[in-house]
Length: 278
Image (cartoon, rainbow, N blue to C red; front, top):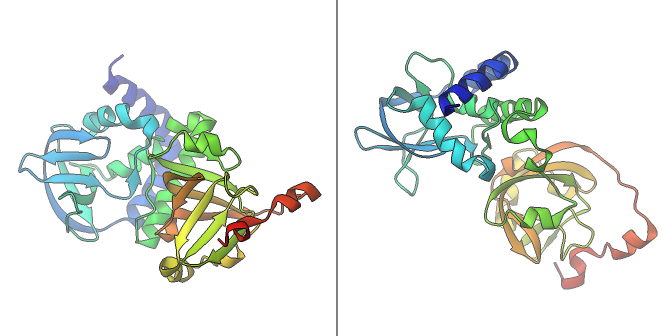
């Protein structure tokens, strides 16, 4: 079966489920016109080159490692050799010379980002600074996750914060991790959001002290995160245990409050950053 045929079948099954979120995403991310052109080459799962030489990066989404290969094929099937329209908050290129944009195939009212999120072939990027647009991106991602489409057909796509070894297996990759926070505190120039009680081995999100005001401005009270259920996203690093360094408020998504039962032994181990002055 060809990739075009597989995409057609997948989209046919998902279109009714994603129609509402696609409409909301389009309305929330209705940015200024940035130009148009014909797609000459698809370079990877979110980047392509127009026939005038411009390189364009799909704004607002991150491809996952699980979709790296088929992501390029899917993007090529959606826009390869087609006329596209570009929209975005500004047209300044990124540090690699790529123009970030929301992309629409000619005569289509649905962005490529919306289609990829709805099919579960990408996740929302936390670097999206437009709050309504980012909320719509998260909603489209959540709809695909709830329907178990694309990467979400496997429960392994959403990493469990209680399984640090599984998270570390994706070192150097973008990941979405969910769990309950055991401690949250500032130590020196870094704020530590610890998900594991054995903090030297457990998963944690780190935030530079100078970046804390941007989180607070976004309504995230970092010091009150203890016992909260959180979905964190970003690039996985290793510093003892797995770490995600957060520089954008969108990297921390509050889900719901949760108060875990802590046994005496667990409480005794919960020394947190104090053990090394963190």
